[in-house]
Image 1 (spheres, rainbow, N blue to C red):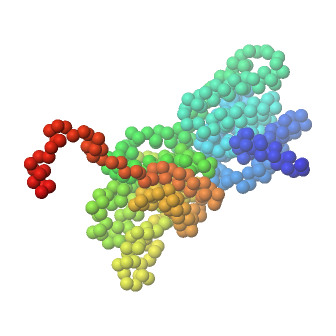
Image 2: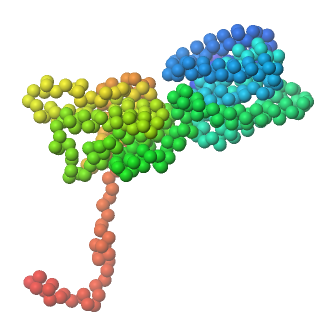
Image 3: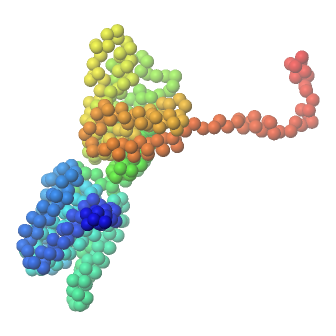
Length: 476
C-alpha cells in the first residue's frame, strides 16, 4: 500500500468520524497554533498561516454564498469585547469564548465556517494578552466545542445544555494546562460559569442578529412550523386542498434534503408557506376546485394564466404582511422559477391557427430561478406531487416514470441552473420522491360492501324462508 493511499484513507476516516469536510483544516490549524507556542511565532504570522490554509482547503467549499460583511461583523464584535476585557485588566476567564462560534453555527448552519471562526477569533487578541497561548488555546477549544455541541440545534434547551458542557470542558482544559496542580479554586468556578453565561448570552442576542443578517435559524423555523400560525389556519379553512398539498411537499422536501445534505427543516417550513398566495383566489387552483365546476372554462387562456401566475406575487405580499423571514419568501418567489404554464400555453395554441402569434415568454413565471438546494428541491417536489396527484391509475411503475420525467424536464428547461445540485443529487432526490409518493398514491384494493358481506353470511329466518306473494308475482 502506497503512502498516498494510506494518507487518503486516514483523511477519509477523519472526515467521516467528525462529519465535516474541513477536518484536515481543523487539524492543520491546531498544529500551527501548538507549533507557534513552542517556536514563539508572532500571532500575526499564525493568522496569516491559518488564513492561507483556509483558502487552500475551502476554495471549492462555497463560502461565497455568505455575506462577508456578516462574518467580519461577528469577528469585530468578538475583538471589541476581548479588547475591552484585556485592556481593563479583567481576568482572562471573563471573556465569552463560545458566544460568537455559537451564533455562527446557529445563524449560518455551517460547521466548517464556525470552526474557521473559532480558530481565528483569538489570534488578533493574543498580542494584547499577558498569556497569549492560554487565550488562543481556551478560545479555540471553547469555540470548537460550541460549534460541535450546538450544530443542528432546534431547541433552546440544547443550547443551555451545551453551555454546561462547554463550562465543564473549559475547566478540564484548565486543569490539564495547570498540569493537575490545583490553586485558586475560584478560577475553575468562573470558567465553568463562563460556558453557561455564554450560552445564555448567545440565545439572548440571537434575535438581534437574525434581524440584522436577515437569517432564519432552526429555532425560529420551529416557531413557523406551529400549525396555529394565522396563515396556516387560513389555508386549512379557505384552501384545504392547497394546505394538504403543502404538507406533502414539505415531507417530500425534508426527506430529499436529508439525502443530499441540505437544510431539511428550512425546506419543510418553506414548503408549508410556498403557496400562500393561493389564498387570494383558492378556487381557481385545481386542488381546491369542484370537479364539476372549473372556473377556467369561462376564461381565456391569457386571463387564466394571469390568475395562476399572480399567486407568486400575492404570496410575497402576504408573507411581508405577516413579517415572514426573507429566507421563507425565497421559497414563494422561486418555487416555479421561470417555468412555463404549460396547460394554458397549450390551450392558447389550440385556439389559434397561427402558432407563431403566441409568445412562450408571456406564459412563463417571472422567476427568479431557485438559487439554493432547498428552494430547488421544493420546486421539484411541488411539480412531482401535483403531477402524481393527477394520475388516474397510480401504480409504482407509473409514479417512477412520472417523477423521472418531471425532474428531467425541469433540468432541461434550465430551472436548476442557479443552484448547486449535482446529477448524483438529482438521482437521490428522485429515489426519495418515488418511495414516498408510491406510498401515498398507490392503488388500493377495493373492499366488498359491508352490507353485502353481512347479507351473504346471514342465515334466513323462518319468516323469510318462504317467498312472499310479491316475490312470487315478480318471479312469474
